Image 1: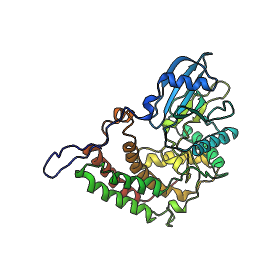
Image 2: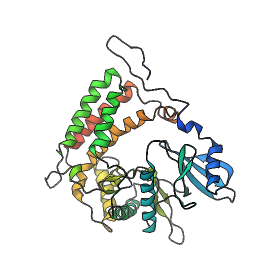
Image 3: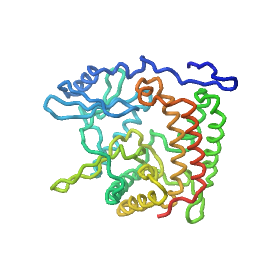
Length: 358
C-alpha cells in the first residue's frame, strides 16, 4: 500500500494500492482466449471483441463458420468451482423451464473448463438492448419472467453460494475497508459513523411495513435469485412477425440466496411517484405467475444501502486489476468518500420513511 504525504496540518490522504501489471488477467491475451476456445473444439477466425465486464473478462468471439459465442473467464479466487457450477445448474434449470436466461453451453460434457490458470465457460451470443423501463408494458413483461425465475429459484436452495445478508454485504465490507485504511483521514470518521448508523438501523429491524408490523432481512423467505438484476443485465429484442422477442436475462454471476424483492428494486428509478408506478407494473406481471410478499417492500432501502457499502469495498478489492483504475479514476478521493457519506445519510432518511405501497 502506498501513502500520500499529508496535504495539511490536520489532513492525511490514504491512497489505494497501485494497479499491478502482474494481476492474473494480465496474462489473458487474445491468443490465450483463442487457445482456450480451441481446447473445447471451437475455432475462432481471429475476431475477438471485449464486452463490458469488470468482475470477469468476457469476449465475443467469431468462429470459423461465422457464428458467434461469448467466452467468460472467471476472476481467479472469487468463486470456487462448486459455486460456479451451482450458477450453471441454476441457468440450466431456468432454460429447461423455458425462462429466457442465457446459460453456458455443454461442451465435451462440461459447462466449466480449465485453461492455464483460468476457468471459463462459453455461452451462445444473444443480441439486444436495454429495456425501456418507462414503458409499463415492458415492466409487466419483465415482472412475469422474474416470477418464473423465482418459481424455479424456490424449488431448492443453493448450498455452496453465499446469501445476501447483513454480514456479507454490510458488516464485512465495512470492516475490511476500515482495516485496510483505504479511506482518507479527513473522511474516515464521518464515513464510519454514517455506516454504523445505517447498519445498526438495518440490524435492529426498525423498518415497518405499511401494515405496521416489523419485517427485516432475517424475516424474509430466501430463494435463489438472479442477484444483480439491473437494466444492463436484461437484453430486450423487439417482437418479430412470429411473436418472438422480449427480455432475456444474462450474467448470473451474482446469483445467490436472498429475498425476491432484490431482483425488483434495481429496476426502479425516479421520484417516489415514478417508483411506485414502476413497481406496480412489475408486480402486475409478477403476480400473474407467483404471489409476492408485499412485506418485502420495506427491504428496498436496506438492500440499496447494503449495495452502496458493498460497492465501495468491491472497487477497493479490485484496484490492482488495471481495468479498474482506467474505468473508475474518481474512486478513492476525499470527494468520492464525501459523496458516499452524503448518500448514506440519504439512505438513513429513506429507511426511516414509510415503504412504497402498491
